[in-house]
Length: 393
Image (tube, rainbow, N blue to C red):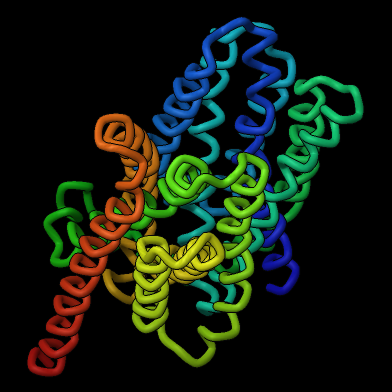
């Protein structure tokens, strides 16, 4: 199991590696392909669409193939897509390749999250998502090293694609390690097979899906528009704002590593509540006219507050809804996450243009409050279910 866990850690790094590549490579890609800057949004939306589709179908794929094969095949698909990106010479080709990349990324994300939620303690879920942050950090570094070294953006994608191919080979070699632990939950999962509409009707499902949508909307909006808020609302220079905004993602990555230790003492529900309070505290610091240092501290706090929420919601899914439906549930949660990521940051962009960038803290606060309300409602539903069980016995 320790060797398999190491493989899963590597897989989570690989999940993060390509996620920030497009942003760091786009200036060169856009210039080479002679397309508007905004066209990067088209590629990200296609990737998100593929991710949403594969997340929703992750349950049936995992039942048919098993987590190990789904992870290996999906990683192979993302590796091939990255190599395709490295050879692309037109925007149309990038759009075509973006779809299989999204399909591969969504399937492996949902499958691995469910596997870890079923077989490992909460600390591993936090640490694994911290390793995703490591991947997100390494990817742009590789791209930056290629560009500063006189190579093209294609080389950055090629290097990351080769790294993914090496990991794919390791995942295929590790397939025998997955079988033993998957057998233990196979029978239960088969007995609990449910269609998507049946799942949505289960108590608490709508609440957790909306909460996941809101969380990812907060994380993505905070990260995407933070630097713009610092520059346009507080008068910071572009360079200083960029450095401080990078600390938001560092806060998430370091926060998840720390949360791995804290989760040994606190349960998932408490970890989520702790993160929510830190986010609200950080947003309040953004609103207070106490200077840029306090504002930047608030920004880091939002990142730290985000750290435990995503892993803890995922890890609590089997206990909240049952191991048999956890794969389908996590797939739906992943889909809602990417809908939130796709829709809510652009919505704020439109509002900022219409009303003003100063709306940024209020926008984050309203979504956070709605997330808190949904998760507290979910907690009440789960509590009632637990109280009803002894009476039924």
